[in-house]
Amino acid sequence: MTEAPAGSVTVVIQTRVLEGHEAAFAAWQEETQKVIAGFPGFIEQSIAPPAPPTQVDWVILQRFASTDAAVGWLNSGARLARLAGVTHMLAGRDDVHLVRDGASGVLPAPIAMVISTRLKPGQEAAYRAWEQRIAAAQSRAPGFQGYRFEAPIPGVQEDFLSILRFDTEANLNAWLLSPERKAMLAEAEPFTAEFHTRLARTGFDQWFGTTAGQAPAAWKQNMLVVLMLYPVVFLFGALVQTPLLQQGAKLPFPVALFVGNVVSVLLLSLLVPWVSRRFGWWLRPGSRWIDAVGAGVLVLLYGAMIAAFTLS
Image (cartoon, rainbow, N blue to C red):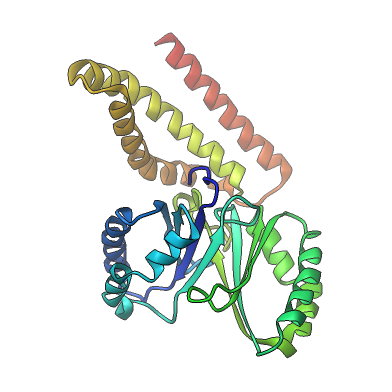
């Protein structure tokens, strides 16, 4: 997603689709995106499909210029009309939360856990004091990258919302299963009516899948994406964009560049899964020696491509 403008907010939606309805839901989501694109204050949307077994939900991020614009969309007749056509595809209730942009803990992240909590009546003060203690504890956990806490918003969300950001799924799971966190959760039982958690992925995970229930490290994903992105961009620019689109069709450079970006993403959706299978030995969690060897091989491939394109 692009850099957040001042005052913008993100609607975080996590929804679970019934088996057999995935294609229909994806088509419904495309049509919904066309509707929301014309809504006042809408900026952009990103969608992360499920990545079983660790993420079984669809995660949808909708950014708006202001809280009023986001709330307006959530309560709009246009959205309610769209929801009427999808309820039969969904399992359980959606998680819909509003998060102010421009601070740590806001999605997207390499790996994030969204936790919504509903309190028993009159327990807000006790919960807030407990939340401060657990926030301090989790900030010391290995791999911790950020934390976000949001109070309920009348008419939008009834729950307290917490978003934990970690660098890897392994580090997130280590904290979630730690004795310290389990003890603190037990302390919260007297004032908690219900809470549930959802794992949220963004980025390139949909191209890589998981190994032993864990996505590859973000830096490894990035290196493989560059390995495929560089030749695609170079060859498309040299063989198609410049001679055919700009010189032949006389398209302005911004238009030709946009076409190139679209083609690049489409090709990467095919090439990155292919190359990730060839580097499966490296993407799997392993020793530092294996990590270094794989990174070295990629650096050599980078150099070979640069040399070949320079001499061409």
